[in-house]
Length: 268
Ligand code: GLN
Image (cartoon, rainbow, N blue to C red):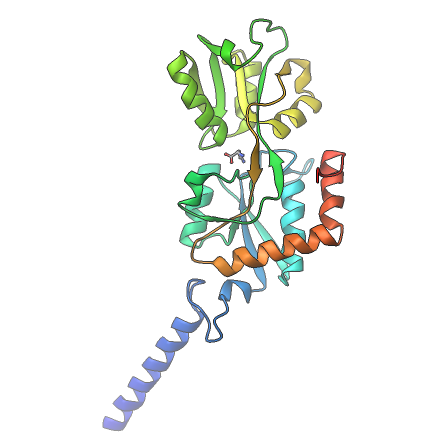
């Protein structure tokens, strides 16, 4: 009986050790390599109404866009068999990366000091910035300074929302929506006088029919860099993404994707 108990104890201990070794992406393997890099599948989170970066293909639930194709190419270069894309609200992405439900966040994320307190970013992969759009017939808004007494629509949890927040002191009313698309709908429905969102997304929206009722004002409000979001627990994943971004920039794949989605070569 004693023998059996001892045997059982050894067994329980072994199972425990195994579980500790394999479970969760948070622990390092014996060789010091982050287990997140040893998986077959990279789990990617995105908010999929942000064309041309992430959006559904026509009549399909499958996502496409510059971000989607770039992270798929990166995952391949990093040795993953596949990248699985999960959709969720933009403001849910950073928490999901930090709890380990996602390996990375790829969603047109601007690299900001505030976010850097919570997560790691890859090296910048796209130069963006905020833009201002109003309805076509509007003649009194020539710059952000003319927004006093007006209503601006923005997307929750974004740099555009932060920018608009600062305009509140100047007599601007801010309406917040879950997606940039919905903010633009509000402009169309005359529930807002302007939209502040990422300029490349607004440009795409205008080119895809938005110019029927809206127009861009000025050349842009800010310049921002996009980066891929990684948990602070996984610096090796950040380093691997950076290395693969370098690889894709060297082998021309990055330029190819950039030209496909933006119709021009990336600025050097
Ligand atoms: N670039 C903006 C930000 O990081 C918006 C991103 C988005 O809406 N997907 O806040």
